[in-house]
Length: 150
Ligand code: SF4
Ligand code: SF4
Image (cartoon, rainbow, N blue to C red; front, side, top):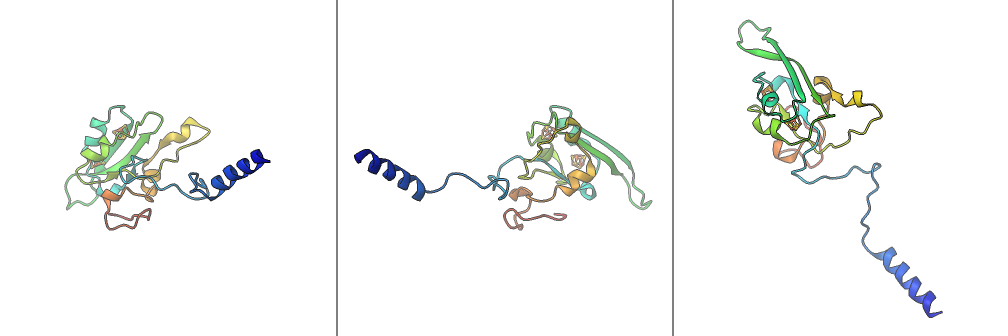
């Protein structure tokens, strides 16, 4: 009898203590502000300087530019921008070096897939990855909110 009461006490304590589990994936996880997640890329901000590709320690960024279609403007505009997340180590160097914040980190970490081919992300996918932009990239954005053309 004493053992039963003791056991019920332990059960009651566990039932009333603060929960340490999350209802993921039904409820998204809120990552820390400095979390380094999958990048968002904004083609309108990119000046095709190539710095991100040069600094990348795993050579997982591939980009090409083309002459600016506006004859009154000099320089290039981005044509293709791809990141291979098979080898990206989410080190943050590409975003640190980017002079225009065309590429920024997000709090999104969900890359699980059945095919390695799906880990090759193109410019359109990276541009659409515009939710959960890391806070320091847009202090005006509500926590966890979507970001549009910072
Ligand atoms: S986070 Fe690091 S490894 Fe990934 S693309 Fe940027 S520089 Fe390369
Ligand atoms: S993303 Fe940034 S660093 Fe990379 S080419 Fe564009 S402007 Fe340069």
